Image (tube, rainbow, N blue to C red):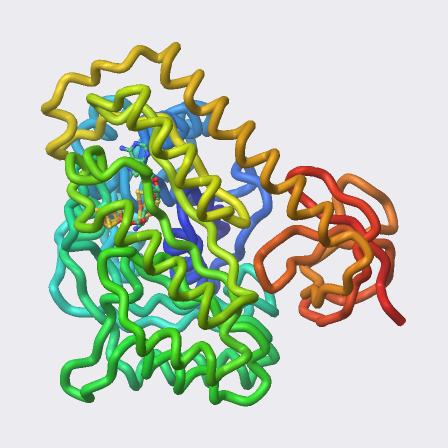
Length: 429
Ligand code: SAH
Ligand code: SF4
Ligand code: F3S
């Protein structure tokens, strides 16, 4: 039997797909590159915005009638009934905590031509370490350290798709980190909706102490962690970063808005000033650190003044990169009850202004990098230019350069030109 997995959404979904890949390969199934070659198609879905959710439905619409179709992930968790109603083709809907039972789903449902669903949320951590062959690549290893979210930001569906926060035991995380290091992985990314709220109460280990321990593993060149919630921040983290040069000097620190009034409406438990204070503290203690962020524009009630505050925060924080989204009302959330009163035209205009400002900042920063040497991890071939490679810097910038290196190698590149979203250079020999 052959299977195909299509993954939408964040890195936790990518990691879950690696786990599904592992389970299916272990039972002798073969993964295909194209959906039409597979007997079972798994769609690992994302529900974070309406557009992401719609992609799932159009993807299913294009599939063959004869294939078995399983929908997993966040839309599966939050929209089980809608999926079944809208798509008669779907055979099984499995939630974010139940895909570990994929063998039972295949034996008891798919092979018997029985349709079913399982979206039970469980309180226990489901331990699973995908083998190397089941991973996305052989140089960056994802390690889920916690799942779920207790913050309930008023716009966000994630607490409803991933459940309440649960933390993976310290020992299991270390086992996976050692496993990856032993298999040649050079970069580790710790994953969770709220990584900095991770703790192991039994072992008395904090998130900063976990980072410190992983940083001590030989051969791990860069350690990253996503996503950090700006509401919980400990100075211990700065100390640990200072002591360990292999913790990448880049933090994704989503602020969402620069207006305290809007932050309050969003249910984020920090003010603009508190957020900026944390950024300044990091920058004063670790001068080379870079931040990136997420923004939502057009949250209900966002005025021109609120939006100007967002623009001024972007100027102050000078992010390395940002992701910005038009507000999308989501079922189950508090904000969805408030009138979505900003017109699409204004939302689009604000998004455009935000993009232009960030583009200007990135061009200015990239210009300053010309002539400088940066360390780059090779990630693969540049699909847009023959004979060129792609890589990432420590601060997660994309770099293109001519050469013949293997993914996962670390090299130095002298930057000679740039665009708003990437750098170009030549390898230092
Ligand atoms: N745990 C992360 C966010 C995960 S969702 C955090 O707290 O920062 C990724 C991003 O999607 C969020 O940072 C937010 O900017 C965006 N997002 C979430 N819900 C959204 C919504 N309803 N409409 C538009 N963007 C949304
Ligand atoms: Fe969503 Fe807020 Fe939790 Fe992030 S912290 S996952 S935005 S509820
Ligand atoms: Fe999407 Fe679920 Fe991740 S909603 S962003 S796949 S946690």
